[in-house]
Length: 65
Image (spheres, rainbow, N blue to C red):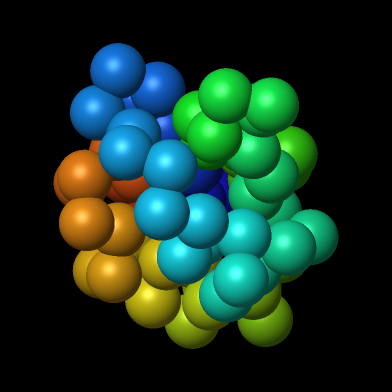
């Protein structure tokens, strides 16, 4: 199973993750990333990896359990 995590302290509020995968990520009123589902479906993994790769604050991570 894949696990997605976010470090709100590293988040700069760019919102790229929300644009790429709105079913998995959201933002607080302050712009900090919120992971909506930490265990994405298999077909969502390319979007998750894209969001992780394009995060300018390097606030997102993905790992296999």
